[in-house]
Image 1 (spheres, one colour):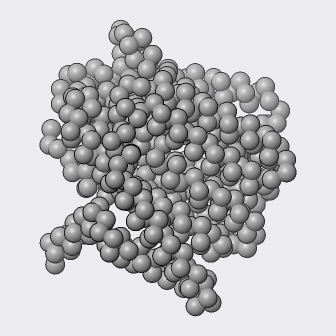
Image 2 (image 1 turned 30 degrees about the vertical axis):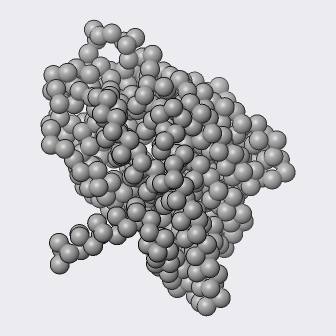
Image 3 (image 1 turned 180 degrees about the vertical axis):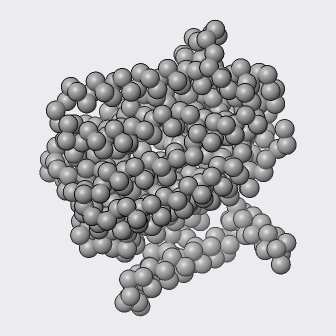
Length: 487
């Protein structure tokens, strides 16, 4: 198989991530005003409920499939049998997920008022299973899914502005959201035939797959609990208004996190393949580059968002959501821990078949998150949810590092990463200065925000170059070469 460029894959997945988040970026300012705080609260509470059942359907299949499939992707017969077995397991887990969802809808009266919205969101479970997106990750084919995203997102935007006109249209918004996320997944299943033949099979060794899948599933459950328990507990302990307020800060946090992690996601299949084939020198080289680049991105992103939190909230959601500024600023402290913990889990522990330690770290983090939420939400409201997220991300990073330090100590405790961290912190000081000056220098909200971002990028890049950060210099040289080739 032709080797795909990690740079091109990172660009394509970043473009895809941008397209996926452009939908909420473009639509959220409109929707948050049209649906109002209560409508947004119902929408997000329903989505958080379905997310648990989506997790049951997904199990740990995608992560496991990418890890194991990347090793055998060059053998068409072997990968076809493997993919068929994984797809069959996924079909059964999807059926179980729907049965449990319907039982919960009947059993809990609290959910009856949300039933219609929950059922709409549940369509995502089926279409995600049919989508078999893990096939495209195994083969590092981001071109097709990026093109698909462009078409679906454009259609979704048109549908949104046609059909969502008032507070009563939150169900229509839910339908359009589902379409934007998984609308083209049935075509994924058909298109996947160019890589391998996927079918439902019955006679195979289920246990060989189920043991690692269920361990990863346990880790995913813990992860989902601490990701979604904030909104779920706010909905149960407070009201739709508080959920709506926190939804804004949480949405912005997730958008930026998705952009930063686009590089990480495309690197996982390559790292899994290299580790599986014991090509450790290449594995370490990619891991070093990945860790340093993500630190260079995560720190300025969190700093810039902290400084521009008020402007971002006003632009995205309007003055009715100004209360979400504090929780958004608290969430900014979670980025660096979240990204580093993600590297250690998906790029080190799981390729090394240490998924039981990922389960352990996520379980402890989830428990910590829930306890802090239960203790602090009554008095701190949405700020408690944000604070618990920061502590949970920090906890996960510490535990993941403990269980992977024999593999990554030379990467994480090195002069290279220390220099990157120090130079990034100095660059972030420059971002703070730029944002303060722009705040005093510009009155217009939009102009202030645009120039703050532009000047911050220039200042940060200049500081990194002056400090001779080799990763920043390398990225600048690559950008020069691309421009030179185009011109």
